Image (cartoon, rainbow, N blue to C red):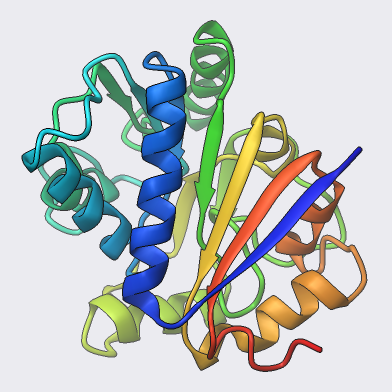
Length: 245
C-alpha cells in the first residue's frame, strides 16, 4: 500500500523544524542511515535546525552516510559556487558524518563518473531516506521536464527556467554566471530510495506543487512521479499549497 502524506506548515522556518525532526527520528531508529541530500535555498532551514540539534547534543550523525543529488559540471571541491562548497558551508563543516559523497563532476569521462556514483550508492545498500526540493517547473534534483523518465545518474543540460531561477537565487540575477550543465541522480535512482521527503516553500512553487499532487503523473512534471513511490511525504508551506484543493 502506498503511503503519501502531505504536511502543511505555516512558513519556511516551520518546514525546516518539521523536516529536521523527521530526519533525526530516522537517524535514531537507524544510526547507519544512508541519507540523500539536496542543495538550494529550501533546505537551508533544515540544515540549520540539524546543526542546532547537534550543538545541543541531541543528534549523532557519526555513522550516517550522505549522497548529494547533484553537482554542477566541472565544479567540486575548491570551487566557491559548487554544491560541494554549499553543503560544507551549510552542514558538513558543522556536523561530522561518517562519509559524504558527491557526483564527480570533474572526471573527464562523465559516463564513467555517473556509473561509479550509482555503483557507490548500491554498495552502501541504497538510500534509506531521500530529501528533495522541487523547481518551479517541477524538476527534482536536476531532472528537467521531459518526455521520458531518466534512469540513473546522468549529465543534464539545464533549462532556461532553471538557469534563470538559480541566477535570481544565487547570482544576483546574472544568468551568465550560472553553469549550463550538471550531473544528477536520475528519477529511477531517486525512486529506489526507501522513503522520500519533498519540501517546498513560497508562492513561486505553488504551480509546481499543484501539478505534482493534483495533475497527471508524467515526466513533463518530474516531481509528479513521486506519487508512484511507496512512502513519500510532502512538507510544504501555506504559499506553496495555495493552489491545492
